[in-house]
Image: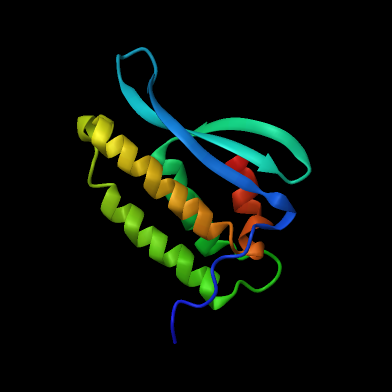
Length: 136
């Protein structure tokens, strides 16, 4: 056994970089939440930026676990998705004000980047509807 080969480059040069996080207002009640900025390159489209809440990353994993794209998802890809579901579930313990602490935010940026890098190593995930919707 062993770790196997390092992840291959994503197909069609798809690259997603978590560039940072920002606290944004959630409606008029003075509530705020964190959003994470993503820079998306590739898929034969110009580079673009989008922002997603932490919960959107959790939902992406849930959708990837439920909606296998047309072709079969490899056991390795399924294992990767399931592993990240568990890690993000543990990470969700930081809620409310705790989720906005600078140390937590920078740790989450690094964690989410690792997650995306690992997921994008699987062609079936790169071409999946849940990922396309997440990056739209």
